Image (cartoon, rainbow, N blue to C red; front, side, top):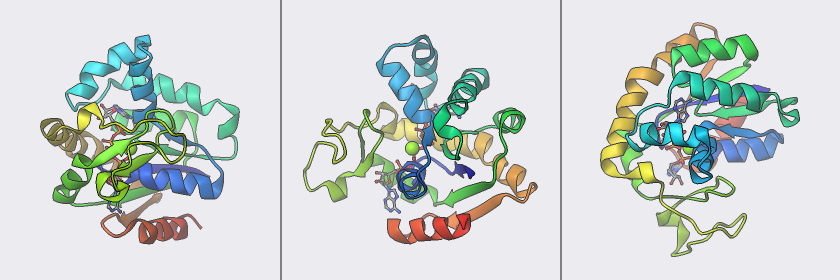
Length: 206
Ligand code: AP5
Ligand code: MG
């Protein structure tokens, strides 16, 4: 099954994508994680993307579409995947239609005020992409999966988060109508606890 996770920054796309991917044994394709790794490794793509990400804006469509096209050709995508953070604009969604058949789009719906709280306490592992919240870490500073030191993302500063929310509402939210019109969208309340949301997504994918 080929699935898209749509939702604002902090909605829980990464958190739930990791769990659903483990349950369905399919890869999580997070464009944000791929770009952060490219920046860390100082690749040409990383150098192009950094200023846009630091400002809380979107990386240009042509850059991101090329990355996803390449990634979807890998062997591990043959039995399905979750696209986490792509597409994020109508041109990206149109480009995706030319290269993949999407079965379901899960929209995680959370109010802006709750998102800011979640993002300000987020800690991530750059090595394996795992996501945590300080309120649940009990002072722990390393990743449960791989032992790497957890960090706060550069774009999780308050002023950058507001720009990311603006980008979401102006450029990405139109995709709700785009996929509703194609009969693929399922809206999930992303404000509850993580287990309830996981169950709701699994039900929507059944
Ligand atoms: P990206 O990395 O995709 O960031 P994002 O969309 O802003 O989303 P986040 O990763 O911030 O949130 P999430 O929904 O994954 O939430 P999470 O599960 O971590 O993109 C970063 C940047 O890259 C973009 O700004 C852009 O510049 C660029 N980019 C990426 N893709 C692009 C594209 N296609 N086109 C152009 N540019 C692109 O959860 C957040 C926190 O909340 C965590 O601490 C978590 O523990 C906690 N939490 C999760 N669920 C719950 C819950 N139910 N209750 C309480 N807390 C919860
Ligand atoms: Mg994420």
